[in-house]
Length: 287
Image (tube, rainbow, N blue to C red):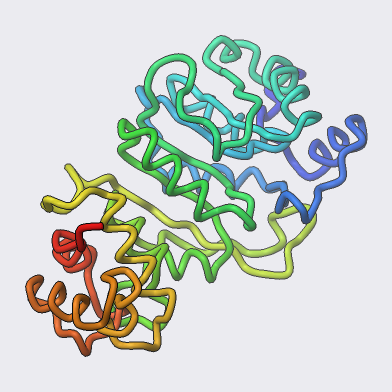
């Protein structure tokens, strides 16, 4: 890089890198590369990335967001599943931000299988998540890395709506409740299609998650609570008495658990808070 040149990648940089590597973004892996440096800076501002943060990034691709994070954070660990992209990213970091290269680590793995990271524990998760695995990856990272205090993810707009939905909303469902188990969740902005290559045929949204001091107070385990959530939304049009009958062993047993938890058996899952699901789970039938 020449002196004064922006370390962040622009559209021509992205295409040159992709051509050199023989990379074509694949729908199979939900790859859409950010080609706009201003969008990268906006994401980092919105994520409130701080100089003392240790950031984990999932799906760094060619490094657009990675470089921006490295300019700001103390340390960045990127998790990349793609062989070609994982092999190339350290060289991109060395070429464009050599003075920060020692603050970067790469984990070449499927994020859904990562349960530990090299270096200091992460304090923030910032990622442009592949559309096809966004929710499972987000929940996996929140579960396995409890030191992550702040998260900002870019996901498909309708997924952003679901994650940030409140009880009573038509799009409130399993992702909403499970994300809320870990964090306070809110929409943090919209992202247009023209900042990506290739441009997706859907809009994107930013979701901010600030970790709770702890999960809702309950005697039930997370697994027990999530089992109730899964059962409640598997047949979301049904009343909880009916929807939870398989989980409880019978409709009568489901009704007893609901009444004991102070929840109407005629209610539906979309009206319940995570705390109410936790209350129901405390009455998980003995197997």
